[in-house]
Length: 164
Image 1 (cartoon, rainbow, N blue to C red):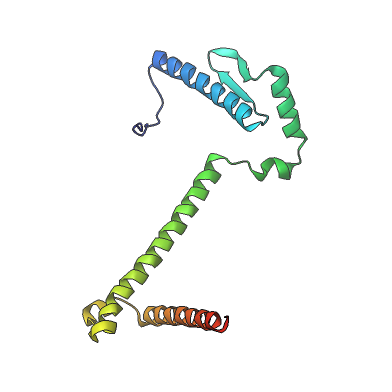
Image 2: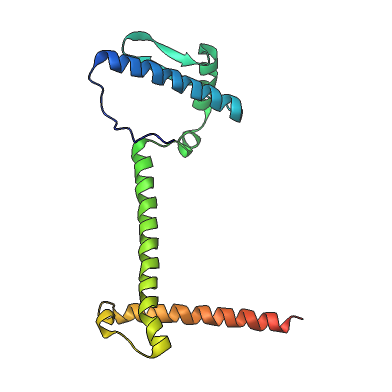
């Protein structure tokens, strides 16, 4: 069963904050270990605790030094190629959501136009109240797209008919 969405906010109670930190740190270290083992990759984790001046590292000091030196030896371009910070992640997420929204708007617009034009095609009746909502340029491009689609299908059928 799925958990409810967690509201991220600073935990004001010190004892609860320390306990949450301890549990989440343990979970994070376990996840890094699993990722490294299952995917056969080099990974490390460095966690600084406000109550402990010594950083906690995984897998070990030498393992972390190895991973960091390998990362440091990469060129600046290679290092930043797949690096994503929160700002970049959010910007990409917003762009993706905007693209999806625009696609859905376009789909809905086409469906609405089709719903308005279908009665005209079948009955010869056009509801002028609904037509006034749309710019005639949109209607023209909608009809042109459909005509092009019909032409493509007819050409495909002609090619299939020619091939025995």
